[in-house]
Length: 100
Image (tube, rainbow, N blue to C red):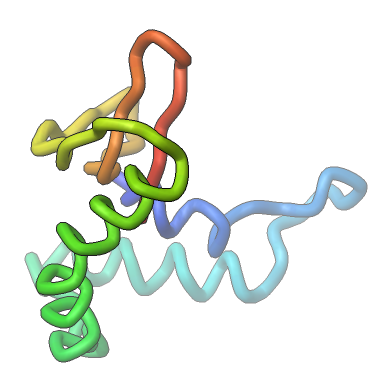
């Protein structure tokens, strides 16, 4: 089972506690249930996602203008263990991953 990089914060535990918080357990139960029945998240806000996609290139261009860079949109999905994600910009030389 893969975890989207953006969801890791929802399942993290506090370092000083021996158990996962109830919010993390709820998130894990939701993810496991969706995985078992091959269900996509019904709460996904497609308007916001679509707006983000439409504005992404303008945002990358603005970032480049402000920081004098020449980045282009990353299209590679990266998976490390059970973590997967597709960040917007990768700078291998500077070891940077940037999400717009």
